[in-house]
Amino acid sequence: MPNPHDMGDDGAVNKDALWLDAIDAEERGDRQETLRICRELVVVEPDNPDAWMTIARMELPTPSKGKQEMPSLLQAAKSVTALRKVVELDPENHQAWNLGGTLLVDHLGMMDDALEWWERRREYSPTEVTPLIEQISILVRMGYYEECADLIEEMFSTEMDSVDGGLKMRMGRVSQTVSKASKMESDDIFRPNQPKHPRWEIIEKLKKKKPISQGLFLMLFVAPMAFFVGSTSMIFIGDSGWSLPIVFIILLVTVMAISRLSMNLLQSINRHALDLERAIDYETTTGQVCIPKSIRESPLYSSLMKGKMPAIKERIHLIVESGEKISKKWELNVP
Image 1 (cartoon, rainbow, N blue to C red):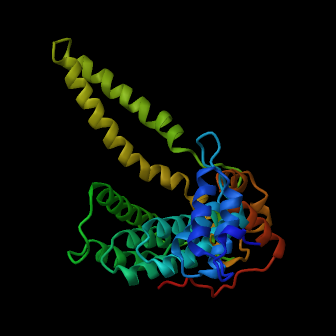
Image 2: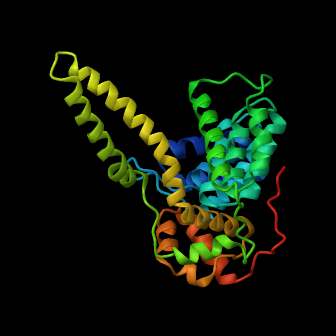
């Protein structure tokens, strides 16, 4: 029931008073009261984007000790529902677009919906680069490299908005990711919804082999080579006053070069894990299963699931319980 002071003289709900109450509740740190008031407000004023944005934020967990807690499946879903209203009412709310995209991909695993989400943003702002970066990132995860190529060409078009250094770096990274991934799968792109695809047999053979982390790989592979180069350089350069700066520069260049080259090797070593990651993405996107039981019970699968968000784990559990299988004819809905 509305508070008496939130009612006008005619008995109608005072929208401004409700909004001020919501602001006051949030400033006091009372998230539940803020959420309650904003839900009441959007009933009488459904076209209030600020109220919907507050609902989207309040549905997510409270930061604890400066650390953001990860949302549950229900929390993420409720937040996305509110965010859909925000961008419908206020298409220029960049925070809403970014938060919605993050929740759809990282917390719900709904790649179809995420592609459509960023396509809607492109309708409002066709020369903005960020939606293209996000769509390319999704497509490369799902193995749709031809579609990536078209978007990359558009992303670097002179007709697009000018970008800052941070976005330029993201554009370069996503372009490199597509190039490396497409080369790795140049022989045959893995489609997890094809149960007889040859990659499933390889995953089955390597299901006890956990992926090697980048940090461990650099320590085992790059560090020894850097040490060898540094030691050799000291021997040849000698003990002159310029030896240390020169050796440092040589080491820096060597480490950067080896690190870049070794990432291709690491990707090849971990390909079975990357393939299984795609299979997980297929399951969360379709809400249907494609991973064989023997692989789902393996150390490889367990190690990948440990790094997933709580909402993704909840979704996977429900999907596995349903037992409905992905159609062999299923295709990602590319805008």
